[in-house]
Length: 595
Image 1 (tube, rainbow, N blue to C red):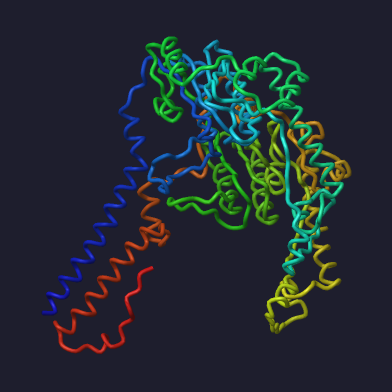
Image 2: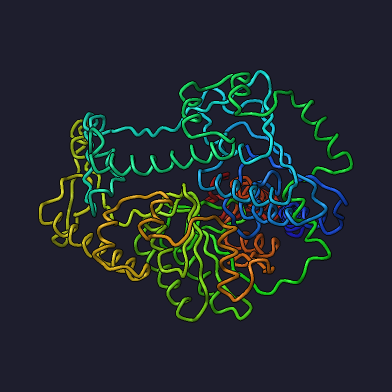
């Protein structure tokens, strides 16, 4: 009978492996299905590029992502820029149609797409956009700013344009936290490093107000001027329309903010008449067709490395079952090092969208950027919506730095904050007993206030970090250290002001950075290059097998596997007494646990 038990257990185990195998095959096909289909597809002889601007564009990640099983994955900003650049000179592409209703992109990303569309329109191909309403129950100034990069704006008659201007709001929580018995201690270098101010103050500080007024005042002026230029109006006319916003459809038409009022079917009919033989294709599908046959060969290879999200020490999460938007210092440093050592790579393009994070992790990346430069590898930095604090740290040693006018950058400073919850514990009658071994064993405890000596030691640490940050920034930007310290102090700047004070080299987006990289390699701007993601994407099946081996699985798949394993064990435990006689192991068998 023992044989029968083993057969039953084996069958259950086999079912488990079959389920895992089938899931693996499904995931692999889902991840690679687009490419399999695309290889067989042929480009239509006549196309119009279709953009859904409400879906937004993500800053790129490399490697397979099974979190959505290949369904509904967001198009990257990199793909959008490349598609628009290629479509400009592609005779198969006759024009662009797009839709928008709200803001799904950051300001710098909006300016990236505006720049790319401006270049596309130099080909005299039309670009039309339709909206049922640009903003509803909320401001949509930046969404409209993006819409103005098209030749014609069509609006549904019942819609409107929520052109109202910009606003910045932040809650100050000190009194609320006091009521809870919580208090934050913050030490910063220097007065403009105000990241924790809303936790330590009851109102905005003069330094913070000065910085924010300058930052958003600069951004607002740039947006107003851009709107006026796009719609053939003066800045005063745009401001007057904002003062009356939000505007109804008829008011928007009368104010020359839109070109036509129509319903979607009327817009589609108009597009169909103008492009009667053209097939509408998305960006991802268009790029899958490849470049036209007449396109010359690429002359060099550029490693494209993304740094997206807060910066932390160690490795980034590269699980194929859903990545977090975090920059792992070790992962990013390795990508730069690997690209610099690759004989097939001619330059590195570092794309940054990060508010900063760990000083140590940022310094780890900075070191690899410096080493890449010393090896003779051109390294260009392109800033997205934000490249501040640690985000600026990893960019400042690059050969050339690009930022959009609306990029938030700088914040050259350091801050440390600690929570003290002693009063909260007293209110809750919670008595903490602390045993310390070493004079400073409980220095970072939340149960007591730090001593004056401890605060002095923390201040010395921040002084050393600030000294290192500003010194390296001054060297990277070829600026006297005293000048750097005057514009540092933790202050954030717009891309426009960052260019004026020397924190960046040039205003422009990813497309401009690509062109500059070509020139840095000794090529012409019109020459073609391969843009290769680093770290290089893993094969989907390889990623899946690594995840299975490490146990890095999503909850549902992990639970299914554990359930099958538990069933197999339970079957063996409960069947064995009847097959083999009494077994002591049954008496001490653990209960069936399903996570």
